[in-house]
Image 1 (tube, one colour):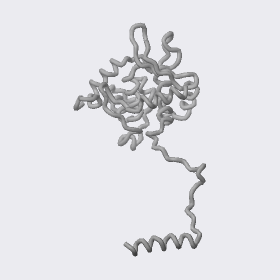
Image 2 (cartoon, rainbow, N blue to C red):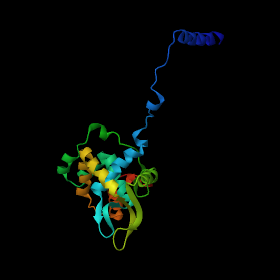
Image 3 (cartoon, one colour):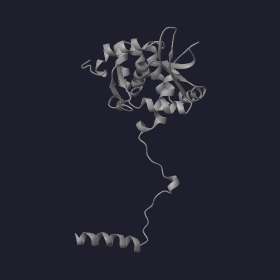
Image 4 (cartoon, rainbow, N blue to C red):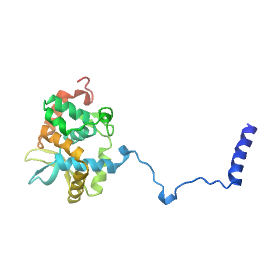
Length: 215
């Protein structure tokens, strides 16, 4: 033990005598690395585009792009984060021409942008509440439980004016995501209800639903 301690002391003595200084960036220039899946800006970026492309304007209920329905929103987001499932839907619907717009890369068949969990009616990200609250705090979206037609209410995610402006910029920067979201629109009408989406998941992807095994 004594020999080891002396060796350590000798090591530091050599560093000191030779004026060896560890090279580090100045404190003000140091940046903490954040995993993309833990970066709320990363999620906000994708969700803004999703609402812009897959959302609907339905006056007098909402005059800006809106996705209504908790389950519909999470399933559409799931399809962008797990694009190989979108490929499976194209195959189920027998619409091979849509595959051209998918542009699925090999690595995207093996992993997703971020993990989602099984929920009662389909996939769900346990951080959505925090992510959406963050987007509301940045004045990018409004989140309400309100009417989307004369007789039905649902969770509604609506772009603000700022959200519309930023989403327009994202459209220019993310053509692949835009194409994939348009594929979603080609399969599921923008006015599709939660009930329709729930039924679709239950029929074709029951393993994504909590408490249901097999597909």
